[in-house]
Structures are given as structure tokens and as C-alpha cells.
Length: 226
Ligand code: SAM
Image (cartoon, rainbow, N blue to C red; front, side, top):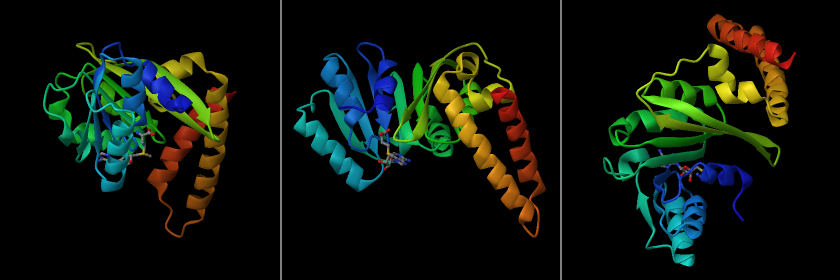
């Protein structure tokens, strides 16, 4: 059974999706999508040999070779320009997702929708999206095995979306709707930042810029929680 996290990701793909799943690992997501929609097509990309073999094995096991193409390569290098309409990048840090998008920019010209599921540093992904021709249209958050996961959906648009620092950090839709998981997450994040600031304060050479950054985030979190 597909994880709740990836089910939410899948729910944002349209009927007849033609998408790339970058960092697909076992290719569970494309197998689930294509099994439930015979008109869907997918490319499963993997940079590492082990996960690439796992992806091929899963696709063969579910007899999905007609719908899913498994390819070995770094980020969006595995797709040709205009080959896909949607891109999924899930289960990695926000910094890595951002760098995959940035390095694959030329492959995104025709990509209508990007679904990103960063495990941490979501703000990197949001700021990249709104600075590169996308508007955020949906956000989700879910808890699984003691970790919270955010899902960010962005659509290509002529319009420029502008977000406040608060919206970049928390997510414009999550901030508006504030589901209970959102509070759970930011309570933990508040504690984490308090600990980090304490550690940085004790350093021989105080990294003042870093401390300032953490303190400003801490203030934003306190504001949202009270
Ligand atoms: N997307 C799946 C999910 O959400 O469950 C798998 C997530 S797994 C934790 C991250 C995968 O991304 C790993 O299999 C790793 O090999 C792959 N990966 C990391 N950097 C990559 C890159 N630059 N290009 C393609 N795949 C990458």
C-alpha cells in the first residue's frame, strides 16, 4: 500500500498525467498512478544504481513497462525538453529539490505542474517556484511515523506570486488553514530552533548572521503559535 504522503502527491496529478518522478527509488508512486489510470504515462528517474534497479524490478513486477520508463541519471537530465507535463520530486531535502529544479530549468519550459514534497527546508522550494514562473496552488501536510511532511503544488503561470517571509516559511495555504498537524510540526520546530540558538551562542566565534536568521524565524513561529 502506498504511503499516505505519496497518496497525497498522487492526488494532485490530473487524469491522463504525463509525468516524471525524479528520485523515484522503488517507483511506487508511478506504479500506483499508472495502475489506477491506464492513460497515465511516467518516467521514473534515479541517480543511484541500487534504487534504479529497484525501480526497474517494481515496474516489471507490476507489468507496467508499457506505461513507465525507468531511467538512470541526475535530476531532470533524464527527461527531454517538452517530454512531460508534470514533475514530481518527493522525499528529499528542500535544498536538493531546489538544486534539481535550478539545474533542470531548460526541461521545465513546458511543465505545467510541479509537485514537490520536501522533507525539510520547504522555504527553499517555495522561493524557487515563485521566482521561476510558478504560482503555488495547493499545499498539504501529513504526519507519518513521527515525521511531518509537506506537499507543495505549483502551476506554471504568467502571474507573479509574491509571498511574505512568513508565507515562504509556513506556506501560504498552510498558514491560512492551519490544520492540527501544522501546529504539531511548528511546536517541534520552535524547540529545535531554541536548541540551535543556544548552541550557537556558546560557540567561541559567534555566527551572528546565523543566530539572527534563527531568531527571526523563531519570532515568526512564536507569533503563529500564540
Ligand atoms: N521519491 C520517493 C519517495 O518520496 O518515497 C523516494 C525518496 S528517497 C528518500 C530519495 C531518492 O532520491 C533516492 O532514491 C535517491 O537515490 C534519489 N536521488 C537523490 N538525488 C537525486 C538526483 N539528483 N537525481 C535523481 N535522483 C536522486
